[in-house]
Length: 526
Image 1 (spheres, rainbow, N blue to C red):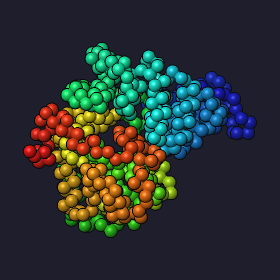
Image 2 (cartoon, rainbow, N blue to C red):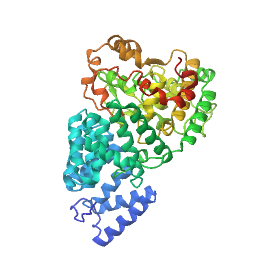
Image 3 (cartoon, rainbow, N blue to C red):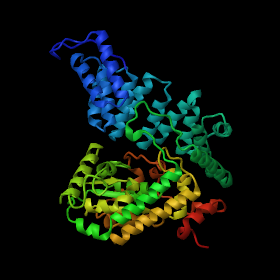
Image 4 (cartoon, one colour):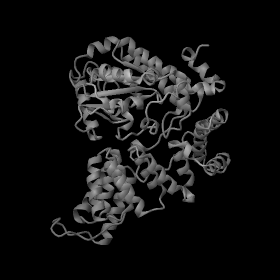
């Protein structure tokens, strides 16, 4: 980001900093910023901005700090100012696109990514993110076209092919597949790209009906991923707010934390505890929470409901976790005796405000599809006694196998081993059984197999009975809804319901012994 030392007359009572002083102030501010001394950095950037309003480095770096702290609207204003005065700044255009994306303003994000691509055509990340934004908007053919252009660049070819394989395995050519296979077998290739190549090969081979070969590719990809859990599998972005930074536990540590959390929450959120605190939550019925395991059919539920004119889907949002962080009953500063009667209502108000900051508009109902919120159902009930809580359920083996077949960008450390993911599933069902015991009937269990086998009647039930919404025919045409969708199932939800994924596990049955053993009571019988 270059500095522009021209000043605007009348914009400040102080004289502009000369070039040397300006350079020194920006250098010191950047040092503070890099070291995490954000208050000192902001003070210096703001001083520069006041003295030299046309020194665009100051608002640019202030915008990045806004992103760091989730002040996306403020970041947007600053970046628009910068790009208006310096339309040739690639960094500012890319950052603007990122912020628009995070605010859910996808058409504008696509335009900004296109401008970034035009400024630096050889930067692969801009094209990858442009393709991703087009995917989110359901413009899959355009996304594949962008990726095909990128595949012509030698340094980015594999990344592009991998993304095409994720979107449309049938679009992969024999030459593409050969490149993936060579990379997967090359011990000198970066391990992240080898892992991604193996998962892509698994998808392609499965589409071709070569199930033993597909499983071998998935298994090797999972083995490498589990051994190299901290290695990035995607190129890092130009800006990286804390929420975008990837932090991995080891699979063993992740499993221990999950087991401890299930035990802690079950012991704390008991029926008497809930009874003592009921009645102090929000009267709002706006939130619709979708919880469960990854790859359980949750995106289909959100797509159906978001097709309703009164419902907005927000995808997976961290709003609830951020709202509850450090607060009773999980904080250290408050006890049951000291919390205010309106504690849970205040949490509810703060949560809704976070959703608005993330782009919830005027629709009366809003969907939060952060699946891991199944851990917080008791708190959700206390915050929103009138909210809908949907539990997406799918056949246990299909759920676990789908997770094993998916390379996640972050988290999900227990999905890279059949035994690990089976144990995770058992703990998750233990948590759900606890909620059914202490809050009987509160959670609506939605079975994926029933929904896809009888969509007409089950979709109507989902809308009218489970969510208490007035019927709208658009819910049956959910695949035509062009709302933004950020999910691993991005291609599937743009199609009518299909049943080909039911009992997918039988194609791989002879390989799944460790999963059956780990699932215990949830393993298939006979």
